Image (cartoon, rainbow, N blue to C red; front, top):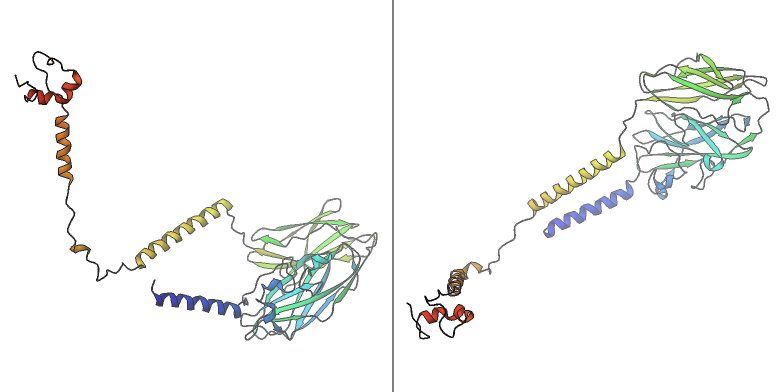
Amino acid sequence: MNLNRRIYIVLFLSLLLVTSTYGAAEPGGNGDATRDMQCGGACHGDASLNETSMATLTLSSSSTVYAGIPTTITLTATNLSSSSTGVVGFFLLTDTTGHSDTPQDAGWEVLSDSNGGAANYVEQTLSSGQSETSVSWVIRSSETGTTPFFAAIHHGGSSSPFFGVTPSGYSVEVSEVPENLPRLSPDFVPQSKRILDVPTELVLQTEFAESVQVQWKVEGGAVMSAQVNSSGENLWSATLPAALQPSSLQWRAILQGDGPEQTTPWFTLTAEEAGWEAEEFAVYLQAFALLFLIAGAVIALQSRLVPPPESSKYDQTDLLPHPIDAAPAVESVIDDLSDESDVAPLPAGGLPNGWNEDQWRWYGHDYLAGKYGGGQE
């Protein structure tokens, strides 16, 4: 690799590092999830780069909240401005420390949000020119007491991410539930997802309820009633119509009994296409195969891109004399030795007088040649 190519690579990596520092915001959003106020720096990069949002945030809820009974808390945001994508993120918090400040950390459950999930952080995409919106959460506390709630907002702007939070907490007081109040079971968790083309059967667990009505609606539509059947003691079932395309509907239950009539919050139910299922082993196998494929391609390209070694003008190897092939001389010596190692034939009368077999093996040829008084007979 020559010097110029190395310089280009260093400049390119430096450019990536610089742009990642100032472009760490994610204009496409992070998706709904359970998040602390600062998202650990993941929502819009470094929190120190955030500018103050000019949005006005207002929280509201029911005046009476009972322990173990779901309630709705609504965030109304006005004076909004966003980036070109229009994505705005909203938080429901119980503290503003930036750590362990979600409703779950304060003993609350998030049963449903306006997007059809169960997260304290939700995102919305605003239309062009839209400056006001609202977000709602269905929450439940199992203990009595007062909890301050805060709302926060993250959104993009012309050049920087923006962040805002309510200056003071919105207090929600939880009271002890009356003995005979008809209500959903404290263990009831509403369904939030369903698949397309399949009717949805809701199963409700109640306490102190003698009759139950279920109402549902789609966005911009009228409120409809679903048929409810009793499937056992404190168990009720209702069927909602199938969704033909990805969409969401809201439903609620009206409970009647000896105590005052109770109406649950609106729960959001979203319909989506069935997801793909894949075996974990197969995914890992494909990942390793792709890894080896890329590694092989890189090695092959590297061998093609590496230039051949340059010959030096001082290299005079071709002018040197070629080495002499000594193999035939060695072979002739070996042949001579093998011939001499053959044992000479014995004379007709056997071994000469005074000779033994070892002497004949080594000096038999000399005897036959007449060196020791013998001769060829």
